[in-house]
Length: 420
Image 1 (cartoon, rainbow, N blue to C red):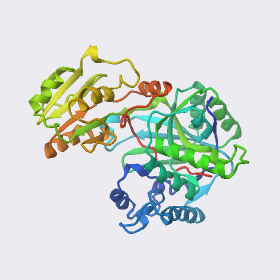
Image 2 (image 1 turned 135 degrees about the vertical axis):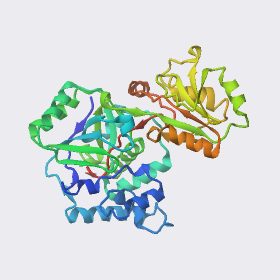
Image 3 (image 1 turned 90 degrees about the vertical axis):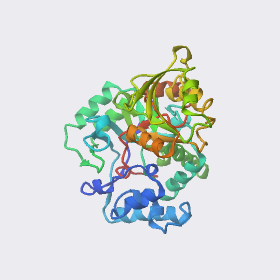
Image 4 (image 1 turned 60 degrees about the vertical axis):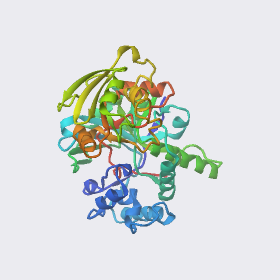
């Protein structure tokens, strides 16, 4: 069963929650992060990306940069921007798409998760299951941030197969006024309900006893970093009891049936020396092909992919005899890699190739057209990975290809901080 516990969160006061809440640290480039914090002194991005407080040419991984993040959090807690819960609590965190760039894709979509702490040992024992590899250089940054700030500041986005008991707890919590209720600049409404009553806290804890497995949906690097900090502190404190806060990591757990995955599209910079006609001829071996002209062929089921090439859209459908039953090889991103990107376009390793770009589905087909029209090459509009596919891959102990999933809406950082 999943070990999930309430915690004494450090959180923004009710009046400043909207000012504090920020998108995850890793959705910004260095330049975008610097621009985003201008005029927003309480945005949590200042703490999540502390290099924004230094000259542009600073070493963003210097010790003093992480110490600045620690000091800013301490200062803002001391002045009341953040308040400390006096007893362990849970929260229900609801995100609803009301307007903005996500509206055409997910208008009205709503999802509610439990904000809690999950067990590091569950991660190590594969009760918390992953589906992606992590990169060591990205881990190093977050390891130092967590260790020096002495806090986990960005929640790990977890999912589980939902239970009636936890849904009942959610319904009871939502009968009370929310602690936070605001709409962020991207049109997402954020509402949070605090659960402090000991009986209700116990009911949620017991509800997760019915959940055998949880899964990382998003935040693999944050999770790996939290675990490595825990292992470091265990080594430093060999008499640890297992109840210390560093043995747990900040998470928001959503029932899988409430989540939506957007496609993660691909743009290849060139045709690997082939002409458009040659590429189409080669593709005919593995796909049925329909010329859609200027009309975007939105993939409607597994095995379908839209391709933008030489000013035309094409609807591709993988031939039945080439479909795979394997949890990983059967993914749409896998057949694209195995049938197109590697053999025809020379993208042997998409993790390291500089000829391929990955475009989140939030940007739509227009972004694919723009990139190909400006710079040439070819774009692929994918059918999104399904939640059941993600769970099946994780249950098999396998890993997905890079950039297989794009989750929206994004959880905000800064609303809940787990100090160690």
